[in-house]
Length: 230
Image 1: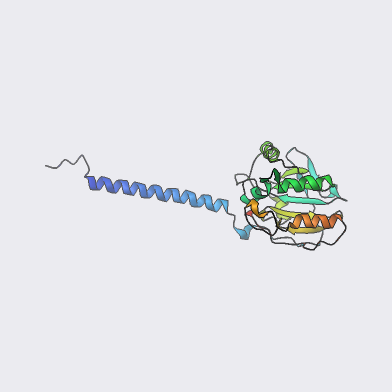
Image 2: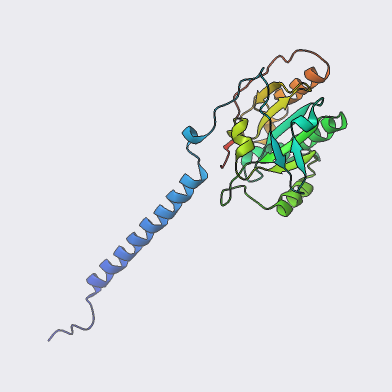
C-alpha cells in the first residue's frame, strides 16, 4: 500500500523548480520596472533650446530657501548647470584628479569673476538623484563644490524651460538676458575622468570668450550623460 501523505521525490522536485521559476520571473519583473523607471522615455523629455534668443525668465528657490531669478541677475553672466550626483557622467566631472575636480574648478574660477553659477537638480520625488535640501548641501560640501547656489527643481519647471535632457548639461546667459550657449560640458561623451584631460571644454571656452567680449565660436552642442529624471 502506497503512503499518499508524502509526495514522491519527482513531484517535490517539480514543485521546487516551479517555485524557483516564479521567483525568477518576479525578480525579473522588478528589475525590469526599475530599469524602466531609471531610463526616462526620450520622447517625454523637453526639446533643446536654440541659442541667440532671450533666455526663459525664471524664479527658483535654492536649498537654503533663497529665491533666485534671471531678472535679479540682470547685468551678470549666469550659468545653469544640470547635475545629478548619482549619474556617472556627473561623477566624472566632480571626481578629484590630482586633488582637483573639473566642475569645482570652473565654479570657483568663474564665480570669482562675478559669474552667477546655479547648479540645478531636476530629479522628481522618488526618482534617482532626488534628495532633500540638507542632503544636497552636504553632498556639495563633501565634493568641494562652489556654485553660487544649488536649485532644487523638484517639479522640473526650470529644467523643462531650458530643455534640460541630460546631466551634466549647461546653459549660459549673457548680461543682457540672451542665451549664449546651450549643451554639453565638453566633446568627450564618456563617464571616465581620464577623458577630461585633452577634451575641448565648451563651457569654459564660451565663458572665456563672452567675458572678453568676443564671439562664442561653439554656441550649441548636443548634451550627453544620464537623462534628467523628471
